[in-house]
Image (cartoon, rainbow, N blue to C red; front, side):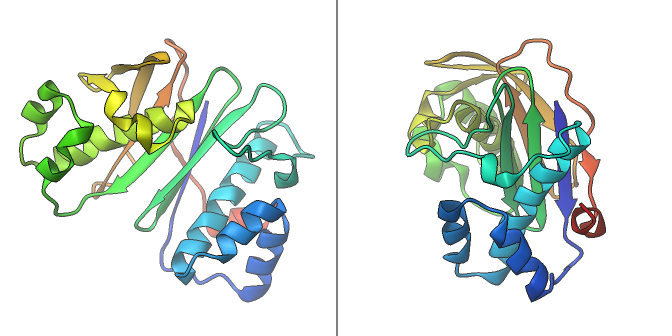
Length: 215
């Protein structure tokens, strides 16, 4: 399993490059990206897809194209064959997880001030007791749960059905999940979830903008 990430040093990608990257996406995803109101969010979304393209080519698939991705009406996007992937972004970080063995999900969230108990409907009694009013603990739990629902493809409606167990394993109606904490930046929490017990998760690889422009 490969973990790639990009941290923006306030890069402003030129319009020609943006147009090229948009043209590489299937039509429905291209239109969804174009509908994003904030320019920075559109950039981060496009960078996420370029991380996937970069990662697949690094894995030996030199002819991989984003046009191969299927976007079912329900569930997560799919690459033909045994590959699975997931993309997440928050603040100025974009992450992409790629796997050829089992399902995978990833979530990254920037630390910020909030009141965890506002979201208590998504957490078990034990989880609520552990996080209390600590915003950082809340975000740690949230990234664990969201990585799992993104791996399974059930969406936010399944968040409250995920029960974490000490940040290493979890379960939901689909079965058992295995969690891996990622260290990307001290101001962020991030987790990967997989349904493979002994999955080999590589150390996150930081990718620079020029590397994405060169592929």
